[in-house]
Length: 600
Ligand code: M6R
Image (cartoon, rainbow, N blue to C red; front, side):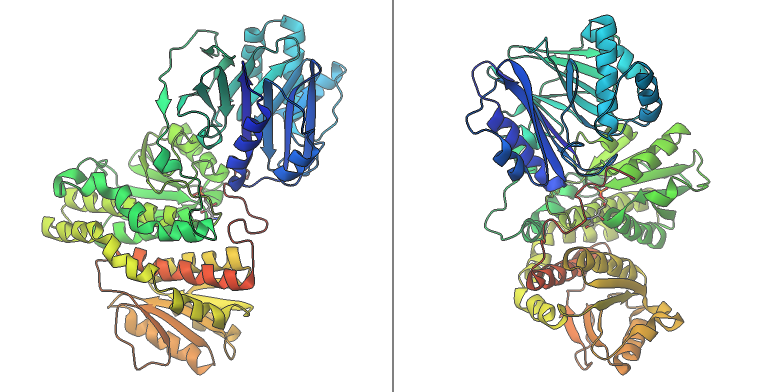
Protein backbone atom coordinates (compact mmCIF):
# COMPACT_ATOMS: atom_id res chain seq x y z
CA UNK A 1 0.00 0.00 0.00
CA UNK A 2 1.27 3.47 -0.82
CA UNK A 3 2.27 5.95 1.89
CA UNK A 4 2.50 9.73 1.83
CA UNK A 5 4.38 12.20 4.00
CA UNK A 6 4.95 15.91 3.41
CA UNK A 7 6.40 18.52 5.74
CA UNK A 8 7.04 22.25 5.89
CA UNK A 9 8.93 24.00 8.68
CA UNK A 10 10.14 27.47 9.66
CA UNK A 11 13.22 26.23 11.51
CA UNK A 12 13.78 22.50 10.90
CA UNK A 13 15.29 20.29 8.27
CA UNK A 14 12.29 18.23 7.16
CA UNK A 15 14.24 15.40 5.48
CA UNK A 16 14.52 13.32 8.70
CA UNK A 17 10.79 13.93 9.33
CA UNK A 18 9.96 12.60 5.86
CA UNK A 19 12.16 9.52 6.15
CA UNK A 20 10.93 8.68 9.67
CA UNK A 21 7.35 9.12 8.47
CA UNK A 22 7.91 6.76 5.53
CA UNK A 23 9.50 4.19 7.86
CA UNK A 24 6.45 4.30 10.11
CA UNK A 25 4.29 3.45 7.09
CA UNK A 26 6.67 0.76 5.86
CA UNK A 27 4.69 -2.11 7.40
CA UNK A 28 1.90 -1.58 4.88
CA UNK A 29 4.12 -2.87 2.09
CA UNK A 30 5.68 -0.98 -0.84
CA UNK A 31 8.17 -1.57 -3.59
CA UNK A 32 9.75 1.83 -4.30
CA UNK A 33 10.19 5.16 -2.57
CA UNK A 34 11.02 8.76 -3.32
CA UNK A 35 11.34 12.27 -1.97
CA UNK A 36 11.24 15.81 -3.41
CA UNK A 37 12.72 18.78 -1.53
CA UNK A 38 14.25 22.17 -2.06
CA UNK A 39 17.96 22.21 -2.89
CA UNK A 40 19.79 25.25 -4.19
CA UNK A 41 16.42 26.96 -4.71
CA UNK A 42 15.24 24.17 -7.01
CA UNK A 43 13.10 21.10 -6.43
CA UNK A 44 15.37 18.08 -6.20
CA UNK A 45 13.83 14.62 -6.64
CA UNK A 46 15.47 11.40 -5.43
CA UNK A 47 13.74 8.08 -6.17
CA UNK A 48 14.61 4.43 -5.98
CA UNK A 49 13.08 0.99 -6.24
CA UNK A 50 13.22 -1.31 -3.21
CA UNK A 51 13.50 -0.39 0.44
CA UNK A 52 13.58 3.04 2.12
CA UNK A 53 17.16 2.34 3.15
CA UNK A 54 18.07 2.50 -0.58
CA UNK A 55 16.50 5.95 -0.69
CA UNK A 56 18.39 7.08 2.41
CA UNK A 57 21.64 5.85 0.90
CA UNK A 58 20.95 7.78 -2.28
CA UNK A 59 20.28 11.05 -0.44
CA UNK A 60 23.16 13.41 0.11
CA UNK A 61 23.71 13.34 3.91
CA UNK A 62 24.42 17.09 3.97
CA UNK A 63 21.20 18.10 2.25
CA UNK A 64 18.75 20.10 4.32
CA UNK A 65 15.39 21.54 3.35
CA UNK A 66 12.46 23.28 4.99
CA UNK A 67 9.92 21.81 2.59
CA UNK A 68 9.53 18.34 1.13
CA UNK A 69 7.17 15.55 0.08
CA UNK A 70 7.83 11.81 0.13
CA UNK A 71 6.18 8.56 -0.88
CA UNK A 72 6.33 4.80 -0.73
CA UNK A 73 4.72 3.17 -3.77
CA UNK A 74 3.03 -0.18 -4.22
CA UNK A 75 3.03 -0.68 -7.99
CA UNK A 76 -0.35 -0.46 -9.76
CA UNK A 77 0.13 1.25 -13.15
CA UNK A 78 3.60 0.29 -14.31
CA UNK A 79 6.42 -1.71 -12.75
CA UNK A 80 8.21 -1.03 -9.48
CA UNK A 81 11.00 1.07 -11.05
CA UNK A 82 12.52 4.33 -9.89
CA UNK A 83 11.02 6.09 -12.95
CA UNK A 84 7.54 5.03 -11.87
CA UNK A 85 8.22 5.85 -8.21
CA UNK A 86 6.79 9.10 -6.83
CA UNK A 87 7.22 12.08 -6.63
CA UNK A 88 6.33 12.94 -10.22
CA UNK A 89 7.06 16.34 -11.62
CA UNK A 90 5.64 18.16 -14.64
CA UNK A 91 6.92 21.71 -15.20
CA UNK A 92 5.63 23.77 -12.22
CA UNK A 93 4.01 20.93 -10.29
CA UNK A 94 5.48 18.09 -8.21
CA UNK A 95 3.20 15.56 -6.51
CA UNK A 96 2.94 12.31 -4.57
CA UNK A 97 -0.31 10.39 -4.86
CA UNK A 98 -2.19 7.52 -3.25
CA UNK A 99 -5.18 6.05 -5.05
CA UNK A 100 -6.08 5.30 -8.64
CA UNK A 101 -6.98 7.73 -11.43
CA UNK A 102 -9.51 5.68 -13.38
CA UNK A 103 -9.80 7.98 -16.41
CA UNK A 104 -6.06 8.58 -16.75
CA UNK A 105 -5.88 7.20 -20.31
CA UNK A 106 -8.48 9.63 -21.59
CA UNK A 107 -6.71 12.52 -19.80
CA UNK A 108 -3.34 11.38 -21.14
CA UNK A 109 -4.71 11.45 -24.73
CA UNK A 110 -6.07 14.92 -24.14
CA UNK A 111 -2.75 16.17 -22.72
CA UNK A 112 -0.69 14.56 -25.49
CA UNK A 113 -2.66 16.64 -27.95
CA UNK A 114 -1.51 19.65 -25.90
CA UNK A 115 2.12 18.53 -26.41
CA UNK A 116 2.64 16.88 -23.02
CA UNK A 117 4.87 13.81 -23.02
CA UNK A 118 5.31 11.25 -20.26
CA UNK A 119 8.34 9.48 -18.82
CA UNK A 120 6.60 6.94 -16.62
CA UNK A 121 3.72 4.49 -17.05
CA UNK A 122 1.86 5.84 -14.04
CA UNK A 123 -1.54 7.42 -13.66
CA UNK A 124 0.11 9.78 -11.16
CA UNK A 125 2.29 11.48 -13.76
CA UNK A 126 -0.88 12.09 -15.80
CA UNK A 127 -2.57 13.63 -12.74
CA UNK A 128 0.50 15.81 -12.21
CA UNK A 129 0.43 16.95 -15.85
CA UNK A 130 -3.27 17.78 -15.57
CA UNK A 131 -2.61 19.92 -12.50
CA UNK A 132 0.15 21.69 -14.40
CA UNK A 133 -2.15 22.15 -17.42
CA UNK A 134 -4.80 23.89 -15.29
CA UNK A 135 -2.17 25.83 -13.34
CA UNK A 136 -0.67 27.25 -16.54
CA UNK A 137 -4.13 28.08 -17.84
CA UNK A 138 -5.53 29.78 -14.72
CA UNK A 139 -2.41 30.77 -12.68
CA UNK A 140 -4.65 30.27 -9.67
CA UNK A 141 -4.27 27.34 -7.28
CA UNK A 142 -7.93 27.28 -6.11
CA UNK A 143 -9.22 27.20 -9.68
CA UNK A 144 -6.60 24.59 -10.65
CA UNK A 145 -7.71 22.26 -7.86
CA UNK A 146 -11.40 22.83 -8.54
CA UNK A 147 -11.02 21.94 -12.23
CA UNK A 148 -8.82 18.95 -11.36
CA UNK A 149 -11.38 17.58 -8.89
CA UNK A 150 -14.13 18.02 -11.49
CA UNK A 151 -12.18 16.16 -14.15
CA UNK A 152 -10.76 13.21 -12.22
CA UNK A 153 -12.63 9.92 -11.88
CA UNK A 154 -11.06 7.75 -9.21
CA UNK A 155 -9.48 8.15 -5.82
CA UNK A 156 -6.65 10.32 -4.61
CA UNK A 157 -4.75 11.69 -1.71
CA UNK A 158 -2.35 14.12 -3.36
CA UNK A 159 0.34 16.28 -1.83
CA UNK A 160 1.59 18.96 -4.19
CA UNK A 161 4.32 21.56 -4.27
CA UNK A 162 4.51 24.33 -6.85
CA UNK A 163 7.90 25.64 -7.99
CA UNK A 164 6.98 29.31 -7.71
CA UNK A 165 4.98 28.97 -4.48
CA UNK A 166 7.41 27.17 -2.18
CA UNK A 167 6.04 28.61 1.07
CA UNK A 168 3.10 26.23 0.83
CA UNK A 169 2.24 22.58 0.47
CA UNK A 170 -1.15 21.73 -1.03
CA UNK A 171 -3.12 18.57 -0.24
CA UNK A 172 -6.18 17.24 -2.09
CA UNK A 173 -8.37 14.35 -1.07
CA UNK A 174 -10.97 11.99 -2.45
CA UNK A 175 -11.54 8.47 -1.09
CA UNK A 176 -7.98 8.03 0.12
CA UNK A 177 -7.06 9.16 3.62
CA UNK A 178 -5.14 12.33 4.41
CA UNK A 179 -4.36 13.99 7.72
CA UNK A 180 -2.61 17.26 8.54
CA UNK A 181 -0.50 17.22 11.71
CA UNK A 182 0.01 20.49 13.52
CA UNK A 183 3.02 21.42 15.62
CA UNK A 184 5.06 24.53 16.43
CA UNK A 185 6.46 26.07 13.27
CA UNK A 186 6.23 22.70 11.51
CA UNK A 187 3.23 21.11 9.86
CA UNK A 188 3.23 17.57 8.51
CA UNK A 189 0.75 15.98 6.11
CA UNK A 190 0.41 12.21 5.75
CA UNK A 191 -1.78 9.38 4.61
CA UNK A 192 -1.80 7.90 8.13
CA UNK A 193 -1.36 9.38 11.59
CA UNK A 194 1.43 6.86 12.26
CA UNK A 195 3.66 8.99 10.02
CA UNK A 196 3.20 12.12 12.16
CA UNK A 197 2.93 10.71 15.67
CA UNK A 198 6.58 11.25 16.55
CA UNK A 199 6.18 14.99 15.96
CA UNK A 200 2.66 15.87 17.04
CA UNK A 201 -0.55 14.46 18.47
CA UNK A 202 -2.85 17.11 16.98
CA UNK A 203 -4.24 16.71 13.53
CA UNK A 204 -6.99 17.60 11.08
CA UNK A 205 -8.75 15.08 8.87
CA UNK A 206 -9.63 15.99 5.30
CA UNK A 207 -12.90 14.74 3.85
CA UNK A 208 -13.56 13.92 0.22
CA UNK A 209 -13.46 16.87 -2.19
CA UNK A 210 -11.62 18.99 0.34
CA UNK A 211 -8.17 20.47 -0.05
CA UNK A 212 -5.78 22.46 2.09
CA UNK A 213 -3.00 24.98 1.85
CA UNK A 214 -0.42 24.17 4.53
CA UNK A 215 2.43 26.47 5.51
CA UNK A 216 4.54 26.98 8.61
CA UNK A 217 1.98 29.21 10.41
CA UNK A 218 -1.30 28.15 9.03
CA UNK A 219 -3.54 25.45 7.63
CA UNK A 220 -6.40 26.64 5.44
CA UNK A 221 -8.86 23.90 4.53
CA UNK A 222 -11.36 24.51 1.75
CA UNK A 223 -14.21 22.76 0.00
CA UNK A 224 -13.96 22.08 -3.73
CA UNK A 225 -15.81 25.35 -4.29
CA UNK A 226 -13.12 27.30 -2.47
CA UNK A 227 -15.15 27.95 0.72
CA UNK A 228 -12.97 28.00 3.86
CA UNK A 229 -14.00 25.24 6.27
CA UNK A 230 -13.72 25.21 10.03
CA UNK A 231 -12.52 21.74 11.04
CA UNK A 232 -12.24 19.88 14.31
CA UNK A 233 -8.68 19.42 15.63
CA UNK A 234 -8.28 15.76 16.65
CA UNK A 235 -5.94 14.23 19.24
CA UNK A 236 -4.10 10.96 18.57
CA UNK A 237 -4.81 8.09 20.96
CA UNK A 238 -1.26 6.78 21.43
CA UNK A 239 -2.19 3.38 22.86
CA UNK A 240 -4.14 2.40 19.78
CA UNK A 241 -1.35 3.22 17.36
CA UNK A 242 1.54 1.66 19.27
CA UNK A 243 4.03 0.79 16.52
CA UNK A 244 6.70 -0.79 18.71
CA UNK A 245 7.76 -4.44 18.68
CA UNK A 246 8.37 -4.50 22.43
CA UNK A 247 10.57 -7.41 23.48
CA UNK A 248 9.19 -9.70 20.77
CA UNK A 249 11.17 -10.97 17.82
CA UNK A 250 8.27 -10.33 15.45
CA UNK A 251 5.24 -8.07 15.34
CA UNK A 252 3.13 -11.14 14.61
CA UNK A 253 4.05 -12.77 17.91
CA UNK A 254 3.49 -9.53 19.80
CA UNK A 255 0.09 -9.14 18.18
CA UNK A 256 -0.91 -12.73 18.97
CA UNK A 257 0.12 -12.21 22.59
CA UNK A 258 -1.86 -8.96 22.87
CA UNK A 259 -5.15 -10.76 22.28
CA UNK A 260 -5.71 -11.19 26.02
CA UNK A 261 -6.31 -7.40 26.03
CA UNK A 262 -7.58 -6.52 22.57
CA UNK A 263 -10.64 -8.78 22.63
CA UNK A 264 -12.05 -7.36 25.85
CA UNK A 265 -11.09 -3.80 24.84
CA UNK A 266 -13.15 -4.27 21.65
CA UNK A 267 -16.34 -5.43 23.38
CA UNK A 268 -16.06 -3.75 26.78
CA UNK A 269 -18.35 -0.79 26.11
CA UNK A 270 -21.06 -3.24 24.94
CA UNK A 271 -20.90 -5.55 27.96
CA UNK A 272 -19.63 -3.49 30.89
CA UNK A 273 -23.11 -2.88 32.33
CA UNK A 274 -24.47 -6.31 31.45
CA UNK A 275 -27.45 -6.66 29.13
CA UNK A 276 -28.20 -2.92 29.01
CA UNK A 277 -24.90 -2.08 27.30
CA UNK A 278 -25.74 -4.36 24.39
CA UNK A 279 -28.54 -2.00 23.39
CA UNK A 280 -25.83 0.43 22.20
CA UNK A 281 -25.40 -1.87 19.19
CA UNK A 282 -27.50 -1.26 16.08
CA UNK A 283 -30.94 -2.89 15.93
CA UNK A 284 -30.87 -5.50 13.16
CA UNK A 285 -34.42 -6.77 13.60
CA UNK A 286 -35.69 -4.56 10.78
CA UNK A 287 -33.65 -6.55 8.26
CA UNK A 288 -34.77 -9.86 6.76
CA UNK A 289 -31.28 -10.94 5.85
CA UNK A 290 -27.69 -10.06 6.71
CA UNK A 291 -24.95 -10.00 4.09
CA UNK A 292 -21.30 -9.94 5.10
CA UNK A 293 -18.52 -8.93 2.71
CA UNK A 294 -14.75 -9.06 3.22
CA UNK A 295 -11.46 -10.52 1.97
CA UNK A 296 -9.03 -13.04 3.44
CA UNK A 297 -9.12 -13.15 7.22
CA UNK A 298 -11.96 -10.62 7.36
CA UNK A 299 -14.02 -12.96 5.17
CA UNK A 300 -13.22 -15.81 7.57
CA UNK A 301 -14.45 -13.70 10.51
CA UNK A 302 -17.63 -13.16 8.49
CA UNK A 303 -18.10 -16.93 8.19
CA UNK A 304 -17.95 -17.28 11.97
CA UNK A 305 -20.58 -14.55 12.29
CA UNK A 306 -22.77 -16.31 9.71
CA UNK A 307 -22.68 -19.45 11.82
CA UNK A 308 -23.65 -17.51 14.95
CA UNK A 309 -26.41 -15.46 13.27
CA UNK A 310 -27.98 -18.54 11.72
CA UNK A 311 -27.53 -21.12 14.51
CA UNK A 312 -28.16 -18.86 17.49
CA UNK A 313 -30.54 -16.15 16.26
CA UNK A 314 -32.23 -17.97 13.36
CA UNK A 315 -31.33 -15.08 11.05
CA UNK A 316 -30.32 -15.76 7.46
CA UNK A 317 -26.80 -14.58 6.74
CA UNK A 318 -24.78 -14.83 3.51
CA UNK A 319 -21.04 -14.20 3.42
CA UNK A 320 -19.25 -13.11 0.26
CA UNK A 321 -15.70 -12.59 -0.86
CA UNK A 322 -15.58 -8.94 -1.85
CA UNK A 323 -13.77 -9.75 -5.10
CA UNK A 324 -16.77 -11.89 -6.15
CA UNK A 325 -19.54 -9.81 -4.62
CA UNK A 326 -18.72 -6.74 -6.67
CA UNK A 327 -19.33 -8.58 -9.96
CA UNK A 328 -22.32 -10.81 -9.21
CA UNK A 329 -26.08 -10.49 -8.97
CA UNK A 330 -26.55 -10.03 -5.25
CA UNK A 331 -30.33 -9.79 -4.84
CA UNK A 332 -29.92 -6.82 -2.52
CA UNK A 333 -32.91 -4.97 -1.15
CA UNK A 334 -33.73 -2.39 1.50
CA UNK A 335 -34.43 -5.33 3.85
CA UNK A 336 -30.83 -6.52 3.58
CA UNK A 337 -28.09 -5.09 5.78
CA UNK A 338 -24.62 -5.51 4.28
CA UNK A 339 -21.78 -5.61 6.81
CA UNK A 340 -18.29 -4.83 5.53
CA UNK A 341 -15.43 -6.26 7.57
CA UNK A 342 -11.91 -4.92 7.14
CA UNK A 343 -8.93 -4.44 9.41
CA UNK A 344 -7.42 -1.66 7.32
CA UNK A 345 -10.61 -0.16 5.94
CA UNK A 346 -8.68 0.29 2.71
CA UNK A 347 -9.08 -3.01 0.85
CA UNK A 348 -9.93 -2.19 -2.77
CA UNK A 349 -12.44 -5.00 -3.44
CA UNK A 350 -14.25 -4.35 -0.16
CA UNK A 351 -14.44 -0.62 -0.93
CA UNK A 352 -15.83 -1.32 -4.42
CA UNK A 353 -18.43 -3.72 -3.04
CA UNK A 354 -19.44 -1.10 -0.50
CA UNK A 355 -19.80 1.52 -3.22
CA UNK A 356 -21.97 -0.86 -5.18
CA UNK A 357 -24.37 -1.31 -2.24
CA UNK A 358 -24.36 2.41 -1.54
CA UNK A 359 -25.08 3.26 -5.16
CA UNK A 360 -28.34 1.33 -4.83
CA UNK A 361 -29.17 3.16 -1.62
CA UNK A 362 -29.18 0.07 0.62
CA UNK A 363 -28.03 0.05 4.26
CA UNK A 364 -24.41 -0.64 5.23
CA UNK A 365 -22.45 -1.25 8.43
CA UNK A 366 -18.65 -1.39 8.84
CA UNK A 367 -16.57 -3.49 11.23
CA UNK A 368 -13.25 -1.69 10.91
CA UNK A 369 -10.01 -1.51 12.88
CA UNK A 370 -8.37 1.60 11.43
CA UNK A 371 -10.30 4.75 12.10
CA UNK A 372 -10.31 7.49 9.48
CA UNK A 373 -10.01 4.80 6.86
CA UNK A 374 -11.94 4.93 3.60
CA UNK A 375 -14.51 2.29 4.54
CA UNK A 376 -15.14 3.93 7.89
CA UNK A 377 -16.09 7.12 6.04
CA UNK A 378 -18.27 5.44 3.45
CA UNK A 379 -20.48 3.15 5.57
CA UNK A 380 -23.76 4.35 7.08
CA UNK A 381 -22.56 3.23 10.51
CA UNK A 382 -19.16 2.04 11.66
CA UNK A 383 -18.29 -0.17 14.65
CA UNK A 384 -14.60 -0.22 15.53
CA UNK A 385 -12.57 -3.19 16.63
CA UNK A 386 -10.06 -1.89 19.14
CA UNK A 387 -7.20 -4.21 18.23
CA UNK A 388 -4.73 -1.31 17.91
CA UNK A 389 -2.08 -1.18 15.17
CA UNK A 390 -1.72 -4.49 13.42
CA UNK A 391 1.62 -4.33 11.68
CA UNK A 392 2.38 -7.94 10.72
CA UNK A 393 0.90 -8.78 7.34
CA UNK A 394 -0.76 -11.88 8.82
CA UNK A 395 -3.88 -10.76 10.60
CA UNK A 396 -4.28 -12.18 14.12
CA UNK A 397 -5.55 -9.81 16.79
CA UNK A 398 -7.77 -8.03 14.24
CA UNK A 399 -9.47 -11.37 13.46
CA UNK A 400 -10.30 -12.18 17.08
CA UNK A 401 -11.44 -8.59 17.65
CA UNK A 402 -13.71 -8.89 14.59
CA UNK A 403 -15.16 -12.13 15.95
CA UNK A 404 -15.68 -10.60 19.39
CA UNK A 405 -17.43 -7.54 17.99
CA UNK A 406 -19.61 -9.62 15.67
CA UNK A 407 -20.41 -11.89 18.63
CA UNK A 408 -21.81 -9.06 20.73
CA UNK A 409 -23.76 -7.89 17.68
CA UNK A 410 -25.27 -11.37 17.37
CA UNK A 411 -26.03 -11.46 21.11
CA UNK A 412 -27.80 -8.09 21.02
CA UNK A 413 -29.74 -9.25 17.96
CA UNK A 414 -30.69 -12.53 19.68
CA UNK A 415 -32.07 -10.61 22.63
CA UNK A 416 -34.03 -8.30 20.37
CA UNK A 417 -35.51 -11.06 18.23
CA UNK A 418 -36.05 -13.19 21.36
CA UNK A 419 -34.12 -16.23 20.16
CA UNK A 420 -31.91 -16.19 23.28
CA UNK A 421 -32.57 -15.53 26.93
CA UNK A 422 -31.02 -12.89 29.17
CA UNK A 423 -29.46 -15.65 31.30
CA UNK A 424 -27.75 -17.13 28.28
CA UNK A 425 -26.37 -13.74 27.29
CA UNK A 426 -25.15 -12.98 30.81
CA UNK A 427 -23.14 -16.23 30.85
CA UNK A 428 -21.46 -15.30 27.55
CA UNK A 429 -20.74 -11.80 28.85
CA UNK A 430 -19.05 -13.31 31.92
CA UNK A 431 -16.82 -15.40 29.69
CA UNK A 432 -15.85 -12.36 27.63
CA UNK A 433 -14.99 -10.53 30.85
CA UNK A 434 -12.88 -13.53 31.82
CA UNK A 435 -11.20 -13.85 28.42
CA UNK A 436 -7.70 -13.13 29.73
CA UNK A 437 -7.83 -16.16 32.04
CA UNK A 438 -9.30 -18.33 29.30
CA UNK A 439 -6.73 -17.57 26.63
CA UNK A 440 -3.56 -16.89 28.59
CA UNK A 441 -2.76 -20.61 29.19
CA UNK A 442 -3.17 -21.20 25.44
CA UNK A 443 -0.95 -18.25 24.59
CA UNK A 444 1.70 -19.53 26.97
CA UNK A 445 1.90 -23.12 25.66
CA UNK A 446 4.95 -22.38 23.50
CA UNK A 447 6.59 -25.80 23.94
CA UNK A 448 3.58 -27.62 22.53
CA UNK A 449 3.36 -25.42 19.42
CA UNK A 450 7.10 -25.57 18.87
CA UNK A 451 7.06 -29.37 19.11
CA UNK A 452 4.27 -29.48 16.48
CA UNK A 453 6.13 -26.98 14.30
CA UNK A 454 9.24 -29.19 14.43
CA UNK A 455 7.20 -32.09 13.06
CA UNK A 456 5.58 -30.18 10.20
CA UNK A 457 7.94 -27.45 9.03
CA UNK A 458 9.62 -29.57 6.36
CA UNK A 459 6.33 -30.79 4.89
CA UNK A 460 5.07 -29.67 1.49
CA UNK A 461 1.31 -30.07 2.01
CA UNK A 462 -0.76 -29.72 5.15
CA UNK A 463 -4.53 -30.19 5.42
CA UNK A 464 -6.87 -28.48 7.85
CA UNK A 465 -10.27 -30.07 8.35
CA UNK A 466 -13.36 -29.47 10.46
CA UNK A 467 -17.14 -29.37 10.41
CA UNK A 468 -19.51 -26.45 11.02
CA UNK A 469 -17.82 -23.65 12.89
CA UNK A 470 -14.64 -25.75 13.09
CA UNK A 471 -14.53 -25.84 9.28
CA UNK A 472 -14.62 -22.03 9.12
CA UNK A 473 -11.84 -21.86 11.72
CA UNK A 474 -9.74 -24.36 9.78
CA UNK A 475 -9.91 -21.98 6.79
CA UNK A 476 -8.28 -19.28 8.89
CA UNK A 477 -5.76 -21.77 10.34
CA UNK A 478 -4.69 -22.84 6.84
CA UNK A 479 -4.43 -19.24 5.62
CA UNK A 480 -2.21 -18.29 8.56
CA UNK A 481 0.16 -21.17 7.92
CA UNK A 482 0.46 -20.75 4.15
CA UNK A 483 0.95 -17.00 4.11
CA UNK A 484 3.89 -16.93 6.50
CA UNK A 485 5.51 -20.39 6.15
CA UNK A 486 4.93 -20.79 2.38
CA UNK A 487 3.83 -24.39 3.01
CA UNK A 488 0.89 -25.38 0.86
CA UNK A 489 -1.98 -25.71 3.32
CA UNK A 490 -5.64 -26.15 2.51
CA UNK A 491 -8.83 -26.28 4.52
CA UNK A 492 -11.53 -28.79 3.71
CA UNK A 493 -14.84 -29.60 5.22
CA UNK A 494 -14.14 -32.93 6.93
CA UNK A 495 -17.16 -34.46 5.19
CA UNK A 496 -15.75 -33.53 1.78
CA UNK A 497 -12.51 -35.50 2.13
CA UNK A 498 -13.97 -38.67 0.66
CA UNK A 499 -15.11 -36.71 -2.38
CA UNK A 500 -11.60 -36.20 -3.66
CA UNK A 501 -9.04 -34.76 -1.28
CA UNK A 502 -8.32 -37.96 0.62
CA UNK A 503 -6.36 -39.19 -2.42
CA UNK A 504 -3.67 -36.66 -1.43
CA UNK A 505 -3.11 -38.15 2.02
CA UNK A 506 0.15 -40.07 2.28
CA UNK A 507 2.36 -41.38 5.06
CA UNK A 508 3.12 -38.51 7.51
CA UNK A 509 0.91 -35.93 5.76
CA UNK A 510 -0.04 -33.55 8.59
CA UNK A 511 -3.78 -33.14 9.10
CA UNK A 512 -4.70 -30.44 11.59
CA UNK A 513 -8.24 -30.23 12.88
CA UNK A 514 -10.54 -28.85 15.53
CA UNK A 515 -13.54 -30.64 16.98
CA UNK A 516 -15.49 -28.47 19.39
CA UNK A 517 -19.11 -29.24 18.56
CA UNK A 518 -20.69 -32.08 20.55
CA UNK A 519 -23.18 -32.76 17.74
CA UNK A 520 -20.53 -33.06 15.03
CA UNK A 521 -17.42 -34.28 16.84
CA UNK A 522 -18.05 -38.00 16.34
CA UNK A 523 -18.27 -37.43 12.58
CA UNK A 524 -15.06 -35.38 12.49
CA UNK A 525 -13.28 -38.05 14.55
CA UNK A 526 -14.31 -40.74 12.02
CA UNK A 527 -12.88 -38.58 9.23
CA UNK A 528 -9.66 -38.24 11.20
CA UNK A 529 -9.52 -42.02 11.67
CA UNK A 530 -9.87 -42.39 7.90
CA UNK A 531 -6.84 -40.22 7.20
CA UNK A 532 -4.95 -41.82 10.09
CA UNK A 533 -5.51 -45.19 8.42
CA UNK A 534 -3.84 -43.77 5.31
CA UNK A 535 -0.75 -42.70 7.24
CA UNK A 536 -1.56 -39.10 8.19
CA UNK A 537 -0.22 -37.46 11.37
CA UNK A 538 -3.15 -35.91 13.23
CA UNK A 539 -3.13 -32.76 15.37
CA UNK A 540 -6.44 -32.06 17.07
CA UNK A 541 -7.70 -29.02 18.98
CA UNK A 542 -10.67 -30.05 21.09
CA UNK A 543 -12.69 -29.41 24.23
CA UNK A 544 -13.56 -33.12 24.39
CA UNK A 545 -11.59 -36.05 25.74
CA UNK A 546 -9.81 -38.09 23.07
CA UNK A 547 -6.75 -39.13 25.07
CA UNK A 548 -6.97 -42.74 23.83
CA UNK A 549 -6.56 -41.70 20.18
CA UNK A 550 -3.28 -41.67 18.26
CA UNK A 551 -3.57 -37.93 17.78
CA UNK A 552 -1.50 -35.05 19.13
CA UNK A 553 -4.12 -33.26 21.22
CA UNK A 554 -4.37 -29.56 22.12
CA UNK A 555 -7.01 -29.17 24.80
CA UNK A 556 -9.10 -26.05 25.18
CA UNK A 557 -11.60 -25.43 27.99
CA UNK A 558 -15.33 -25.95 27.46
CA UNK A 559 -16.80 -22.51 26.79
CA UNK A 560 -19.77 -20.89 25.02
CA UNK A 561 -19.93 -21.12 21.23
CA UNK A 562 -19.17 -17.37 21.12
CA UNK A 563 -15.82 -17.88 22.82
CA UNK A 564 -14.80 -21.13 21.09
CA UNK A 565 -13.57 -19.54 17.84
CA UNK A 566 -11.17 -17.38 19.83
CA UNK A 567 -9.76 -20.33 21.78
CA UNK A 568 -9.39 -22.53 18.70
CA UNK A 569 -7.64 -19.92 16.62
CA UNK A 570 -4.85 -19.21 19.11
CA UNK A 571 -3.16 -22.62 18.67
CA UNK A 572 -3.64 -22.25 14.89
CA UNK A 573 -1.92 -18.85 14.94
CA UNK A 574 0.96 -20.06 17.10
CA UNK A 575 1.52 -23.27 15.14
CA UNK A 576 1.79 -21.11 12.00
CA UNK A 577 4.15 -18.68 13.74
CA UNK A 578 6.58 -21.32 15.08
CA UNK A 579 6.53 -23.25 11.79
CA UNK A 580 7.49 -20.10 9.88
CA UNK A 581 10.12 -19.35 12.53
CA UNK A 582 11.76 -22.74 11.94
CA UNK A 583 11.59 -22.20 8.19
CA UNK A 584 13.28 -18.81 8.59
CA UNK A 585 10.81 -16.85 6.48
CA UNK A 586 10.22 -13.10 6.69
CA UNK A 587 7.32 -13.57 9.13
CA UNK A 588 6.11 -9.99 9.41
CA UNK A 589 6.42 -9.25 5.72
CA UNK A 590 5.89 -12.48 3.79
CA UNK A 591 6.91 -12.45 0.17
CA UNK A 592 4.46 -11.10 -2.42
CA UNK A 593 2.05 -9.81 0.22
CA UNK A 594 1.11 -6.34 1.41
CA UNK A 595 -0.65 -5.43 4.62
CA UNK A 596 -3.43 -3.66 2.77
CA UNK A 597 -4.48 -4.73 -0.70
CA UNK A 598 -5.47 -1.40 -2.18
CA UNK A 599 -5.64 -2.57 -5.77
CA UNK A 600 -8.00 -5.04 -7.37
O1 M6R B 1 -7.55 -4.96 5.79
P1 M6R B 1 -8.50 -6.05 5.47
O2 M6R B 1 -9.05 -6.72 6.67
O3 M6R B 1 -9.63 -5.62 4.55
O4 M6R B 1 -7.64 -7.11 4.69
C1 M6R B 1 -8.23 -8.25 4.14
C2 M6R B 1 -7.18 -9.26 3.76
O5 M6R B 1 -6.31 -8.73 2.80
C3 M6R B 1 -6.37 -9.73 4.96
O6 M6R B 1 -7.19 -10.25 5.96
C4 M6R B 1 -5.36 -10.81 4.53
O7 M6R B 1 -6.02 -11.95 4.12
C5 M6R B 1 -4.39 -11.10 5.69
N1 M6R B 1 -3.04 -11.00 5.23
C6 M6R B 1 -4.54 -12.46 6.26
O8 M6R B 1 -3.67 -12.69 7.30
